Amino acid sequence: MMTEPDNPYDLLGDDHDDGHRWAFGTGFTDPLAGVDTTVPAGLDAAALARYCLALGDDALIYSHRLQQWVTRLPELEEETALANIALDLLGQARMLLARAGGILGRTEDELAFFRPEAEFRNVRLAEHEDRDFAELAGRLLVFSAWRLARFEVLAGAADPVLAAIAAKGVNELAYHRDYAAQWVVRLGDGTALSHARMERGLAAIWPLTSELFRPDPDAAALGPGLGPDFAAVEPGVFDGVIATVLAAAGLDRPPAAPLALVGGRAGRDGVHTEAMGYILAELQSVARAYPDATW
Amino acid sequence: MVTAPPARGPAPGDIVPGDAVPADTVPADTVPADAVPADTAAYGIAGSTPDPELPMLTVADLGILRDVAVTCDEVVVTITPTYSGCPAMREISADVSRRLARAGFGRVTVRTQLAPAWTSDWITADGRRKLAAAGIAPPSAARPRGGPVPLTLGLGPAVSPACPRCGSALTQRTAQFGATACKSLYRCDACGEPFEAVKPL
Image (cartoon, rainbow over all chains, first blue to last red; front, top):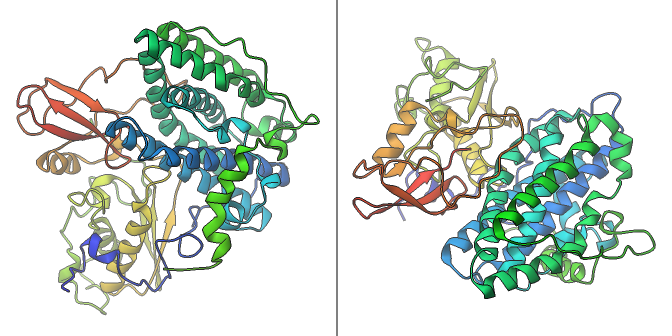
């Protein structure tokens, strides 16, 4: 078959000298290749690694949940939207896991595919299984509004790598948050049925929101290294965004009680809901069955 | 408006545009002629690499080429990712290396630079013309950096891009996300045709 040397589609089939493959495990270049990953003096490197791992796990697990929706969404436009959002989050996850892994001496693949459930640090909101599109929209609004508020602050973090990942993420998360907010308004302010289903969706996910603002020992250890007013800014920004969206949607903030902790522990401590085991079984099965496979 | 990227390499106004130094005219396995400084030649070759998802644009048009540094035995190319998860970055990196190797540069290293984050404002005037000529509306100005990101509850942007086919300003967004991370979908109310637009980021 004729191939053109500069046609990128022809080049996809090349067996490059650098071992690149379109598969997990091998051939993915380090997303931080060439980035100076020295931890600045005065920062607690172990706490920084745990903190980046937590943010990376949130994105990895949430991305997987969104990927499961692809081919099951109500319209083609929503397919492309959620696939794109999942892709952005996967990109953020790769950089954050690479940042954590660089400090911990582990690769992003080891962290994603070969860690047991109890070592995953994502909040339980990320692993929640949405029952319908309204629940998906409500959960995406909460997750992206929270993550955007946090990344806006982290863009000023003392670690330049985390700051750069956050600054880049802000621009992507702004699109995710707008997309989710517009759907919450459209459904909440739509028909009686869409309003009722949006209300039910928010009620289902609301117990998972208080965990997002639990005190974080790693954030405390990093202190002002995470950016000025880290603890003070974020809940206020989040509450403001949620209030604006719910007001436009004609919805009330659900009065739901928080999902109980387990022995005082939750997602950040590796304690997850039943849903998490099923996600990891799917996410990790090929890598565990065929370690180091290439194709 | 095009904001010049704060590149450490040649500024966009200085670069050898597009194919001024086409890789194909440089014989393989030879060091580029002394008449063209190695830095400029390497910048031209790296910069004229096509983007795999927007092949009408080169990486220089896209504004992701931050720097090309040539030492006696190595070329170090620095690129900035567009979107965090953009799968084209790895292909671009491999293509840049291959083109430079074919032009006789022995050792090529492609490095990632995360900060400052890429913005669609860095797409050059030339790049914008090529996008429009290919039926893709170029991006409007990105939101200024810093400060809280305002929430947008309307179903479309304040200003819709003009139709790249008929030029009408009467267009509406049909989907915020498109076939690649960097594009949205629109429809022109005047000519009725759908079109893609590069998202402001």
